[in-house]
Image (cartoon, rainbow, N blue to C red):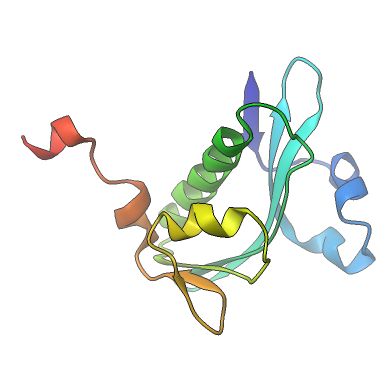
Length: 132
């Protein structure tokens, strides 16, 4: 089972972020509850109506890797929508996750990948609910 949440102690994810200046940043983590292994971490910051994802680290390389990423992103965006954020920026990374975000209506800009209304994209009703 996968648990997604904000890590209580930085030491659990320190091996992924050795830079001392990152210790005070905000993180969301996915962890395997059976092995207590870190599966993935998102480093982010939010202010006003914008959340910015600076880094995504995925030490887990097994089956379901993109499902873990999707769960982390949706959890983060749900929490940020509660904080009245509507715009999301993913800083340029050049990694395989860019395709995931572009598949969710993120557009490439100088800032990075941007979606100006991520709640509408990530939290739309299912097909059956839309017809009601």
